Length: 342
Ligand code: 1CP
Image 1 (cartoon, rainbow, N blue to C red):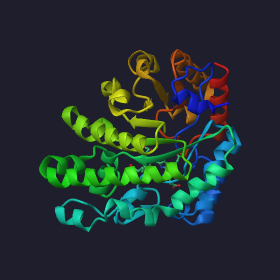
Image 2: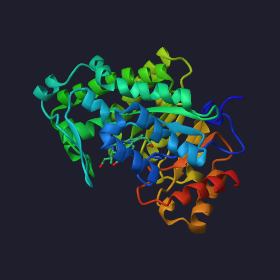
Image 3: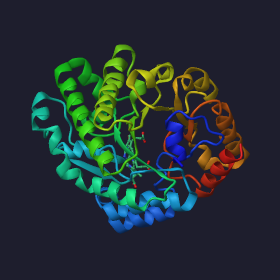
Image 4: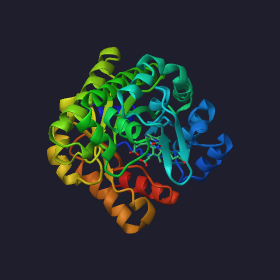
């Protein structure tokens, strides 16, 4: 019996969709906070295979999700390429910046990443051994544009201004950076697959700020190249692409990049997605994560509305973005119950 998640990704229309949740291992869970404290800090947790596997398994044990996502971060790739990375409590990530050709020259070659990322592959190996038989293991990486926005600005930004500025004023440096991240991402995801990841997801969290040709060149083209390379090395590996806030560019995106599933953020309606995106294949999403904070009858109604709207084709139930630290863990159980009884 094939796992529910893999059946949906293969294009099967199911009576009940598989369910998992972005950031399902995270600060809203007391057991996550305890393990993170034991590790010392967030990055130490990412690089500790036993503890990273433990936090990945926590939401599976508590809720019985259909998929587990490797506990790591998209910013480990920049660090493996030689950028400095640290987290400021209450603020978020900080990195040394890449804004000139000289900065680019100081980065390490793509194939040097494994040295630093080896503990991540070890986490995947532990998980592929320890996950329940019905649970699918998802590996992931950031898409090149999103990773580049952090490497150029040295932090998270509202409008990705510094990355747009480099793109528009020093195209050669910008495209060299996109190229380096693309190569590193292919190598990184290949190793995750070899270690036991059964699906990989590409997070392009800031795809929505790319417009027109920029979207084609820096969201679509790199995703297409990464997916083609992964499928050549690992025939049949399912890939989920998440061009967050792509809006009308969601239409045709999955087919254009060769993804098996397109993850939807909550700025598009499930009804619209059923008509315009799911016609091409599996979609994932897309409940607003704020319902995990507010709960109540609205949570149940929303989970059931989305499930029903996407019931006519292959669907993986998820949120439109990560669950937030202020969410109530009981609301997660209510969401799962609502989806499974819709
Ligand atoms: O304090 C803490 O414990 C850290 C909070 C945290 C967590 C739980 C960060 C810092 N990263 C993670 C884990 C993480 N990040 C996962 C693990 C698996 C899971 O989902 O359970 C994944 C898939 C990510 C992916 C990620 N990291 C993205 C893409 C998805 C998205 O949320 O849009 C991005 C943009 C990041 C960068 C990042 N890492 C952490 C934070 C707070 C951020 C966002 C920074 C910002 O833009 O301000």
